[in-house]
Length: 115
Length: 117
Image 1 (cartoon, helix red, strand yellow):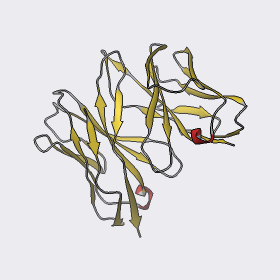
Image 2 (cartoon, one colour; image 1 turned 30 degrees about the horizontal axis):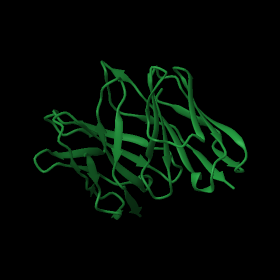
Image 3 (tube, rainbow over the protein chains, first blue to last red; image 1 turned 135 degrees about the vertical axis):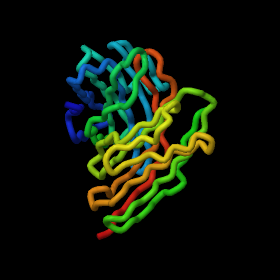
């Protein structure tokens, strides 16, 4: 099973709202990632968790707050977003293979619109 | 700095024909990995194929093969016998670092492939 699930599929939120994106995988992967993708652009890495610890934060604004409650779950908490934050948010996971990791498996994404 | 270049913004191919999507890369690392992903309009990124820098054979996965030319720093994707379902955006990516049990992918700009009946 190479499935990464993401909820919700679509989200519309106002600039004063607080919402969360959820990502789940049951492949035993110990690295999980959040990406942001604008239309017609490649994905941009936001955060990386390895063994439930934040390993990379690509200078993401604090209105995005990641959380990894356990090895299967990854959340992205959203607060006071701007219209330019509207994008496809992709979650991915990868397996630790002796300290190296290879392919990342992606979820279907959450299409976020900030009004 | 590592960089991935995809020079073809769009390509089209007739159904059942083969097509090559170009990818060149730049890195000073000796150990690296190259990936191709497919992204249909639904949004999900689908892993297609992987090539390690030390792999002597070109990677193949079904109708996908990777034409790896290390000296030229190119990693072109070849899709044989194109199908209508192959219409999608294709991204070439390189792994930057592989320590700590995770990797960081650098993506190219992508190539949009349209398969015509």
